[in-house]
Image (tube, rainbow, N blue to C red):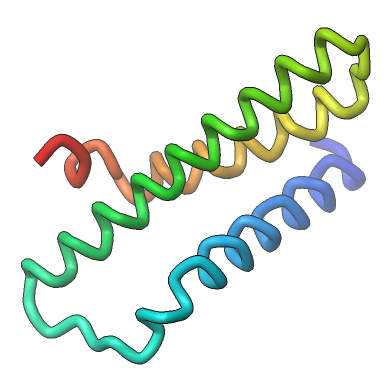
Length: 97
C-alpha cells in the first residue's frame, strides 16, 4: 500500500470515528459498569458500523453508474477501513443476539 493510500485510509478511519462518536454523543457521559451494558454498547456500535457500510455501498453503486472510478476507489477504501474495524471488534458475536 502506497503512502497516498495509507493517508486516505487513515483519513477515512478518522472520519468514521468522528461520525460514530457524534452519533453517540448523548451517551458520552454514560459509564459502562456491567457486562450487559458493554454488550449493549458494542451491539449498537457494531450495528452502526454495518449501517455505515451499507450507505457506502450505495455510494459505490452510484459511482459505478456514473463512471466515477476515483470516487468508487475512495469509497472502497473507506468500506475496507470500516470492515476492518468491524472484524477487529469481532462484531459477529454482538449482532443477532
